[in-house]
Length: 167
Image 1 (cartoon, one colour):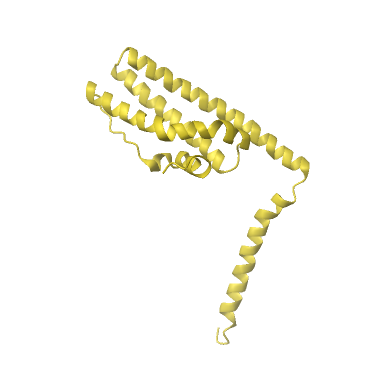
Image 2: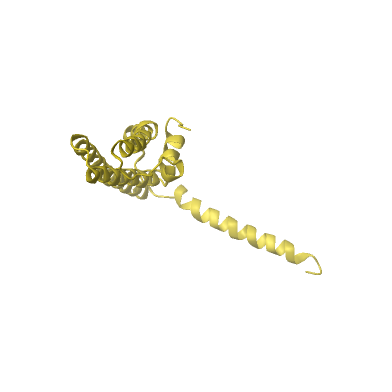
């Protein structure tokens, strides 16, 4: 360190390490064969189909719980709506996480999922929490939930990154 070369050596070593890492991450994307690209596309398509099925199943469960509750508003059915709502929104976050990490077919993302998640952010999430709060007060059920953006960060991120830009 007396000759001043140690700090420069550390900078050079760090720059080489960072450069090697970046190149290691980017290079396979540029030199994938056509077959490798098709394999990735196929895997993303299959992942999309599986996540879409799981997401739709969670949505149907949530809708069924709401319908049951509206027919007979008991505390047990209120809890079922809360549970099925949590399941549905958790699955929505999983799907959005997959979108953000490029594990979803871009056609599914653009043509099917984005419009859905735009509605989730603008309508479904706010209405769910309003409904739960209103019904808990009307029937004296214990409920302290509230819509917090951080709880649904990936859903908002998908809409803002690929969709209409809800803020």
